[in-house]
Image 1 (cartoon, rainbow over the protein chains, first blue to last red):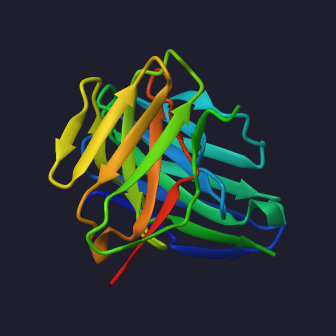
Image 2: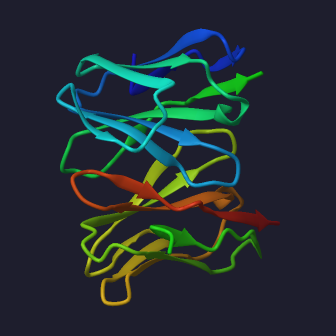
Length: 112
Length: 109
């Protein structure tokens, strides 16, 4: 296992479903991030966890709920999403202070 | 003003050309700066950090102008494999990394 792994790679869900995205990093980093990438828009920072503590919540709607049970795992729980939430959700990790982010391949979410 | 602003392009250049991208940022207290590369339908990957004194890595040169709050990336002798989207990234503070929307480059034979 190497780097940052995200599952599932693709997810289609209805607006009333509850699903979760999973991220795992094998780099020994102490910070993990969720970003949202929509077409023709910059990556939007959603959440930052440092040493398993949430240090940033970038005004994200409560229908997105992050969970960081340990320094290697990060989840994004999804419920009652809207079609405009369809996007690529990217997980990243870093060693705080270095500034370099290592990204997973992303989970492409489609909300019907 | 956007936090990090880039010309979206696209830049279409022939092989061997020199191309330059600029990026401006709004927060004068920003601490560190990076260029990332993102290939189509792939995740972003670090291309190079940008240091105050400017830095070079092969055909790539990055520069920072703190007074004017912009960074630049110069690519010399463009290759087909350089075709990608180039993302300007600014570490605002406390590892809050903000991305520009990216500049798309296509290098043609």
